[in-house]
Length: 60
Image 1: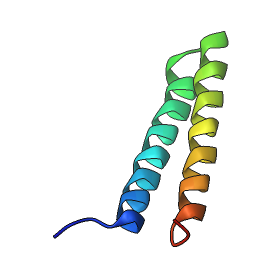
Image 2: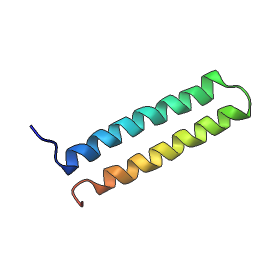
Image 3: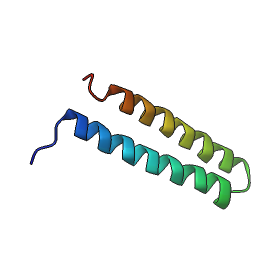
Image 4: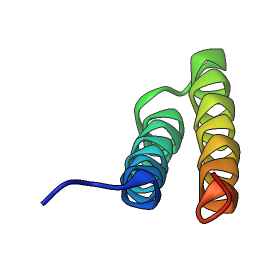
């Protein structure tokens, strides 16, 4: 069974949300200094990109 464009975007959205949660968790629980803020902001950026991928499903 081949994957179409919507399936690929759905998997990419899921992976981006998972990595975003992992980065936010690293920033919140692992790093107590300024690096934690960086990890959390990159995690929020991953959420933004996942939101764009989710919005593209059915349009590409």
